[in-house]
Image: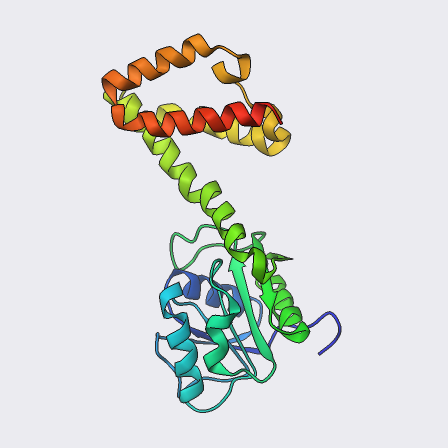
Length: 249
């Protein structure tokens, strides 16, 4: 392979769920020959480059199945953000192991990966170059994350995506509790504008009572939550404290 690396001509994908299906579709559009196989596949694999698109808890077993099904693959990878490359050791790849984690939500098997960032890693320089080239061929924008930083990286992704949904649903539930119909639709313009402001300006986009130092309003918020939705108080307090700290940076 060249110093820059090149995407494989053939890709065996184990796991036909949302990640496997979306990556398979993108690979086919890129002209890569794709074999999309169910979990536990081993004997029928093209062993040039194998990508495991299975749940984190099943990666090690899937890697073992690859090796036991007919020999060592040249390259084997997974698409987990939090799982280390050690989970692939049972496959004993000839060239090395790698990972590609699309930093994007995958709601179905046809999710559009074009333009999505992708965290890549490799156990060898050649494996890392292949991961980078494959991510680019799939239409993604690769960036490297070290093994030591992998779990912290995935925690950041979870905060940005998963917890955002939790936070907005909590707000919608509170709005619904006071009789506002269609609370998600009512909140949507505020949420979109706040997100766009943060993308453009970072912490400087912060508005509201804490940013203004209006602790009297914050106290009234807490009183209202205590009466209406006391289960939200710990979340409110944690977010308020984090917001105060952000204002001092």
